[in-house]
Length: 340
Image 1 (cartoon, rainbow, N blue to C red):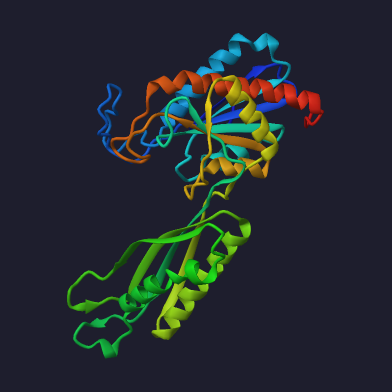
Image 2 (cartoon, rainbow, N blue to C red):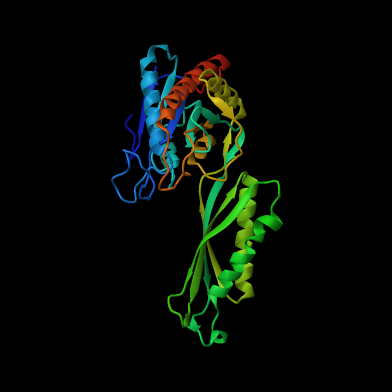
């Protein structure tokens, strides 16, 4: 399909009419130099499929091949999305902006996981992955000679106080049964051993599993930054970078996801929700769907330079996604719930 995308591909199999079901994979890599002992190891420094997106792409290509072979039997349309930029900035939003999701009745995706063996599948109804936000807080003080701190306002001390205090946002302010998290990952200020700088910044991320928790944790952090700065005579400038919302699987489609997993011989495994993020969640603002986790064998974790997948998981994943899409088309027809 001819879409205004710098990278990424969208294709269709079927009649071109409703029902329309989409299956999506992500195609981007990570800035990691690959160290996995595999023949297809990346030849480019700082460029590696360390999260299995090459596996996702190959799986959906395989699904497309299988769907094309049975196209005459598909009484609807299966839209196949090869999405750029899952790792950020969000490629899902770029796909949505093209309008290609507007007439879709249901959407499905998957992610490989080294936590499960080949032949196993993780299926989670409801909240499955977290909303992801980032923050950068700059504490503005007054630079001065390190020998005379009383003549200035120390932003390093202010930032350090904030880093300690922000650990209480979750433990003292959030529902203990609601999964939320704050991690400070970067603090930087000053360049010389004898100079107190004008400013220091702190960066980090928050994770939450609900809209309410997401907003509450932001409110607490912004308030804490301002009050901590005021206590030390400094000022806080908060820059909030929103990411994808929580990925909340539609339990209605979970029934079909399990049915197809059984048909394809997958061993369904219970999985706890993850505080990792996934921009597939943006699609759920437009259309219901389901996202599953395909076991690719125990390996190094995602984003590790030695991460790899077992290729034996590839064909079963292709079969599963093709069958899931076909079954979804049939189910929408039976329910009469198509947008068409």
